[in-house]
Image (cartoon, rainbow, N blue to C red; front, side, top):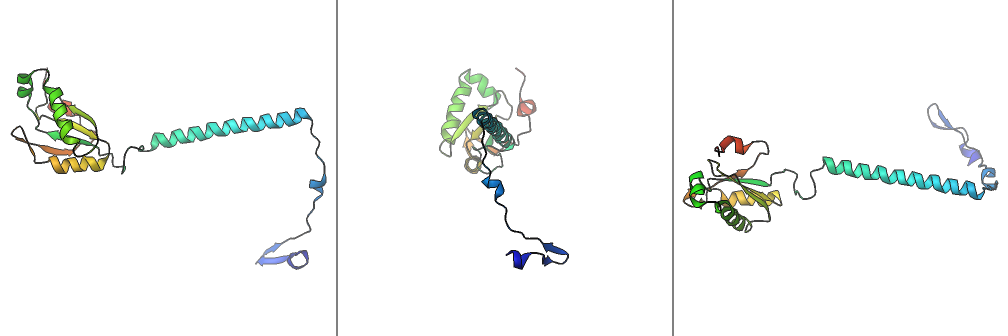
Length: 176
């Protein structure tokens, strides 16, 4: 190899230099004391601990900027607004148990569609809004498909995704 490849023109103005290998470095016997070996092992352990900290920090950073594992398609559209489910007058007339009964009814209907995480009625809202959070966005889409235009207590339900920005309580809440 040395005979054929030494000073070989690999490409224009680029020659390679080949020489016989030198193994003297490996023949040399390294004698380290026990203290020196312990110091080397301790420094390697310390470097390993730093590596673990680095990996943990990187993982935490990825989790902080990711959408999370419980969202299926990254759209974030898992909250459905169901409008016109009640009126403020109806809630006052029925009393304190009205909203808990409403939550139970809505949860029961929505669980037929998918896994419900949370049901939240916006008390005394003039549009009668109930928010339903589903486990996945495809379940929320199915809820909109099934519930939009459906009748509930003589009223037509409007179902849509929550945009995540609108303060619904400020837009339609009535003073207490």
